[in-house]
Length: 51
Image 1 (cartoon, helix red, strand yellow):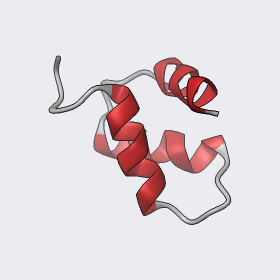
Image 2: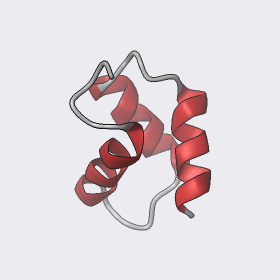
Image 3: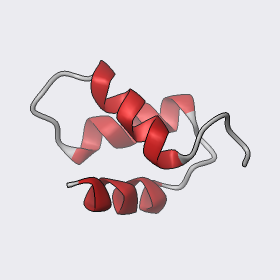
């Protein structure tokens, strides 16, 4: 694992820090800023699994 937590846990951290309601764009931007090596497709897949 490259980062300190799996993507699903990073996603939970992200969601707690963003204004609600969410769209995918702020989430993708957050990941690009904080975890640039995680692909947008991986983030989208985790979002889809979480909702």
